[in-house]
Length: 291
Picture 1: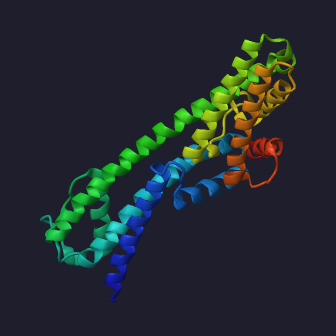
Picture 2: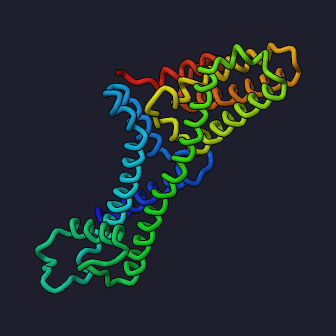
């Protein structure tokens, strides 16, 4: 196998790696591509050693890095496929001198133009199979753009639900709900517990489907679930000690949903092996930043 065939194989591998990672990150309901996971964890660890204001940008920064990585992999991969056939299988616009140009640079130029502009520049393929491949790369570029937009549209509603639950728990804490819970009407108490269980359940589902949301930090303690969620566990414990069956049942339900949330947090991110309270404490510590 000559060096040019090696370049072609390497190009195919790079393109397939980008597509594999994109598929598992965006369209596998409980998956995350290896490239995305690698950058998420690297940026997350780095963010712990920078100023708090910069550390809060870890999530958005990682989204940008991953999307750019997909683009670079496709551009370089397709360029390596074109490279062995430059300049023989391409037509150059008048004024361009193929014999005076770098073949690899021309391949990179062609690949970037095809991917980003959905069109052709001043280098046009003449071989039949390349005339099919270049439009396919343009279609792939459109798919990458669509995927990037859809990713953002998936992530930020999940973050909104998480922040809303955090703010609700903080308001309940400031209102002294744990102390007042034994004295509330049974329907009000059970309704409150059911509402919280539903909110925690939605956060659980979001974390399973969009695990990258874990790496988004919030700007204040009141909207940071890692800070406020232990209060939900406190409410569940108070409710489980109630003499009213409806309230006890609501407390058990909330405790079970919190246990599910702690399980996914520990399995995917924290790896403490602790109980629910221990995992939630580790969650708070992992989300904290130096001042």
